[in-house]
Image 1 (cartoon, rainbow, N blue to C red):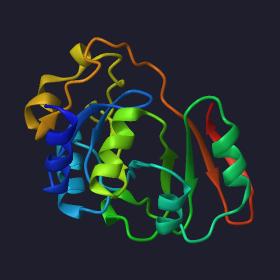
Image 2 (cartoon, one colour):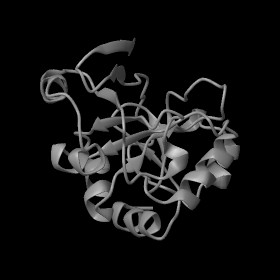
Image 3 (cartoon, helix red, strand yellow):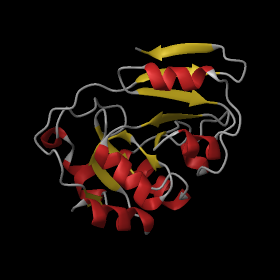
Image 4 (cartoon, rainbow, N blue to C red):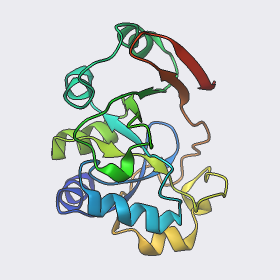
Length: 184
């Protein structure tokens, strides 16, 4: 399916397999609990593990994370690789997306397909790796499990032959600005 169809699918509560700015991802509207529950089921993932979400910029980030340290602006602006920051006290996101402490990993994406999806639904999208829980993430579309492909509601048919091997950097930040690097 193309971008326009993918946007409508997500708006209507569907799940999507798509190439992200890092690896192949499974996604949906990050505010739709039913769709997020379906992603858990597709991945066969424990409910206590949170998801990463993608936003299109700081304005959207600020709608869901009302308070965060200013260092986050610099981290997001100056990183050369995609960077996911785990923010505390996130609001307005489906409960399934959140970690037990109310935090969630959020990345400001620069990927054109991801930006079109986010702008099209006007909400953040989930971006979890397109693998079954416990298995390595696929490096290309052909490595994605048939079980994942069969149970997702749609597949964005872009960059199907592209090799995608690098997950984002991952940092957990607190309101006081203290942080911990979880993945380089």
